Structure formats: structure tokens, C-alpha cells
Image (tube, rainbow, N blue to C red; front, side, top):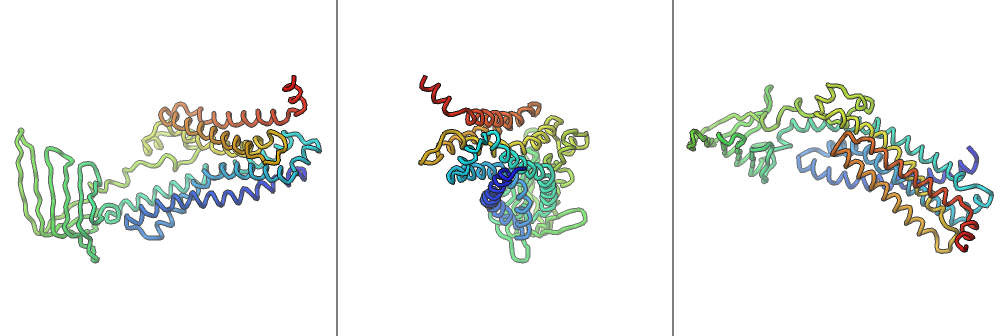
Length: 375
């Protein structure tokens, strides 16, 4: 690597660190606020909130790094042009293709960072988050027993609690079980207590009434039973955590490329969907070199201007938006039909062609273009 390459690469890496820190902070705080509100409202502690926000950090970084690479190359190229360093390099005989070499190396370094995240850290974080969510789901008090709001744990079940006392007593308890339209039961109680047993969580209803509405032979029959104490099994509301579907995104890329029957049964996904997830991870790092080259190549178009390169910056931003639009369109197509997973690589290919075209235009002698325009 020549001294000029090291100089340009060091400039871009320094700017990349700054932009990555700023963008990650903005994205992460935005996600952390929504996650904070959700977990705190469910009764979780600050440590749980901190753990979940930390687990979302690898995903946020993998999304932000290509954008930070684009911002670093665009700003760095603009500064090199403004300080006449880029002009001096071109006057020394360095073509745009030669100047693009350190930029491509910079993009490959960012791509390696993204690959490490999407293939290792992000699946590990998702697996840990899935495990923690399953543990929290077992805490019925935090998930369902919230005062002052109607809740619907499962279809056909309505739950309401007026207030929760400091000692854990549920005051003015209401539960309607209408999952079977032919046999509906409504439980009301002055108080209720949560009791944990080896068989699972139980609700002990105190001083209440059970109303059962049964439809038999076209006739409705209502029976009312008053009780002093009644135990209600909450397993039907919480569900069996062991029977929950596993998150497809928590598996390794190699296993997703060759999905076995165990993986498909655990996730409930098809083989094409598993392969689409794996190829999506393989295509994600390719966005970093494309974004970096777009931020550099577009700013090489045109000559020196006292008004700066704001026009080239606008074209660079528009090109990046176009590539990101293709990424979103490809993901939507694959989401509707997982067998179309080769489309995931199309945005990176189109972006590379745009970069090559722009570098070719920048490498053409300006005098020849002017003579052709005059002719």
C-alpha cells in the first residue's frame, strides 16, 4: 500500500468512526426509548431494560455502518477537494480508478465489520433476546396483570383488574373466557391472589361469582355459582413456553443455508425462507463498499467550482437512496415469495455498475468532452 493510499484510508477511517458513533447513538436511543416504555409498562426492572437495549445494539450497528461509510467518503472527498489535495493528486497523473483503490479498501474493511455483525453477533443477540423473552413471558404478573386496562392475553379472553395493592392483591378482578362460543364463562371476584406452584401459576379468586352461559340444542342456559375461594389455572392464558416458535434469525448462517427438518419444525418456516434469510445476511455486507464508492465517485464528476460540490453531493445522496429503494423492493419480493432470494443480490450489483459508470465518466478527458460538445 502506497503512502497516498494510507493517507486517504486514514482520513476516511477517522471520519467513519465519527459518523458511525453519531448515527449509532441516534438510532440506538430511538429504539431504546420505545423499548424502555414497553418494558417499564410491563413492570420490568431497569436492569432488564438495559439488557434488552444492549442486545439490540449489534443490529443497529449493522444497519448504520454502510450509511456511515457513505457519509465518511462523501465528506472526506469534499474536504480533499476543498483543500486542493485531490486536485494535486489528479495533476500528478492519478486517474479516478487509481484514486478509488483506497476507497474500495475502506469499503471492504467496513464490509468485514458488517459481516462479523450479521453472521455472528446479531444471531447471538437475537438468540439471547428470544431466551429472555421466553423467561419474561412466564412472569404472568408482569405480562398480563396490569391495573386499569382491559387486556386480551389470547383470542376470546378478556381480563380486567381495577387495582393492584402493595401486597400483591388483585382488587375487583374480572375474567371472561369466550374461546368456546358454545360455552362461555365469566369470573368476577372482589380480590384475587397469584400463587405459584410446581404445576404453574394459579389465580385464587376470593368472594366472587362464576357465570356460565351454555348453548344447548339452540337454547341458552345461564348458571351462576357463588364461591368463597376458587383456583384458576393460568396455563391457558400464558401458553406453553416450550411450544413457542423459535426465531429463524437466531440461527447461524451455515445452518440456514442447509436447513434440516429440526430447524424447520422449530421455526415453522420453509426451506426457501431459511435460505432467503441466509442470503440476506450474505448480501448485507456488500452494501458497505457500494455506499462508500458512491460517496466518492459522484464527487469526482465536474471540475473545480468556487461554489463547492453540492450538486455532486445531491447526486450521491440520490444514488444511495435509489440503491436503498432497490434493497427494500428486493426484500419485499422475497418476503412474498422466498424462492426469489437471488433478487437480494441485485441492489449491490446495480450499485456497483453505477459506481463503475461514474468512474468511467470521471476518467474521460475533459478537453475531449468539450471538443465533442462544441462540434
